Image (tube, rainbow, N blue to C red; front, side):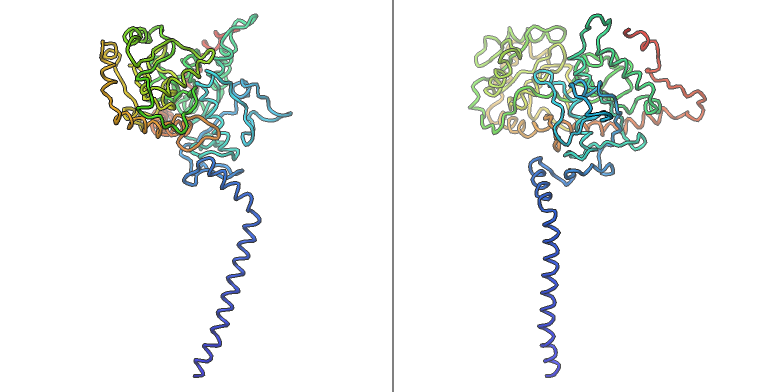
Length: 465
């Protein structure tokens, strides 16, 4: 009985002790939470707004961890004249550095057709975000030592340079675009990072077909990020070493699209330039074959006036959208079709499609050989043979994959920026193989002069004033 009484006396004391301890720890937790509550709430809201998944995106003010990144990138600190200076951005104050602070407002890129080749801008912003602590999925992270990097990024806005500065302005004998290319080659030729690898680990962006028009022939060892290979010889650019990136679409996204098969009255849609040279001559042939067909819209159009608005409305009201080779194998029309959820009909024998190693285009588009497309009746019979059920499967798939073709800042998981980084990352083993093969006999080299094409001085000396 005495033992039982002692136990019963100790039981309330133990219960009171446990209760006091629980209250103490609870109050301590609430105190800690209250000190960081607003910041934590802001981070949670930011994560929901930006579509964070997998815990990879850092909170505000936190930089990406290179050890967890898919791709580690060394980026040259080129002067602003090569990148954001082309957007009329100037470093703030004396000694303000060469890069904008991307944690706030960022320099704006010009609109219209300029946007379709703006890839350099979006990738550079994402690299800066990875270092400065702005929101990013952290697939690619900027590192400060070449030895820690998988690739070297050359931040030259080549497409914008061509669009804005390709014309010669008297009394100059050369355009500013060519002068920038020349200065870029001079910069690279002097860099130890280039000399170590002969440029084979360098990533150069020239998405506009005429971007880097002169320098491309000296940069052939690099990894190019291009829209297609139409104006490149295979010795300079090819699918083995280079990356095909999507255009940025010009028409707006079709949000909350419920316009299914029966809600789109036009069977087949095309609006654009009809008379083109080279491989684009097929447009003229198709025009004469299709212009009188019922439920087909095939007409001339441009971005002038309300051309973009007309194209937006036309694509959203159509089941299928023609994407025909023009002066080059590709155009932004394919990506306008994708975000309009108008099933693309691709007729371009030389086209290379972005991310085709991970995306099956036949699940959301129809690809036709040019020789078949110009046969009388072939194309119409093919399109009419795709019923509502099959079309709806492709329509739904378009809505699933359109995120992969979206350029935006801040970048989001699996958008176009992150898909490009992942594609470059898949090139890294091949890049390393080429560099290692290059170094096979390095112990026997007494003359360390690089055999890179950049060190052929005659080109540099003969370009411009």
